[in-house]
Length: 101
Image (cartoon, rainbow, N blue to C red; front, side, top):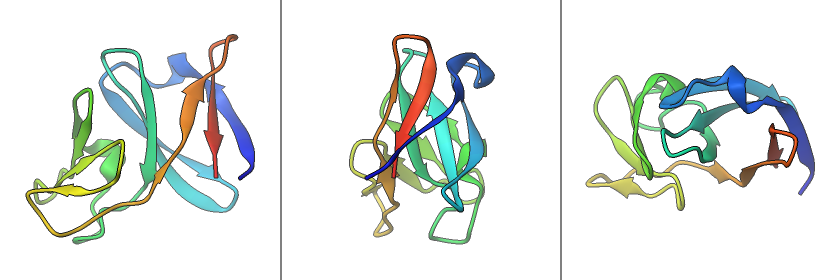
């Protein structure tokens, strides 16, 4: 896996997600209200909904199109048979988001 610095944490407001192009892949990166960061594939596998626009909490994202929920830690669907790809992400000491692909 390679690590990529995608910018400062402040570029994503708490409780929201943003899309980034990383290593030719569109990745959704989320900043929880608790201060954690998570990264997933950008599109919901159900109907291609934009996951970065979904509702999030400390552990899940909900697709804004059809309310499919997914766990940030595993990518497994919650109450559905879909799953998403998840990527390791963390905040460096200098406040930059680091993503591994």
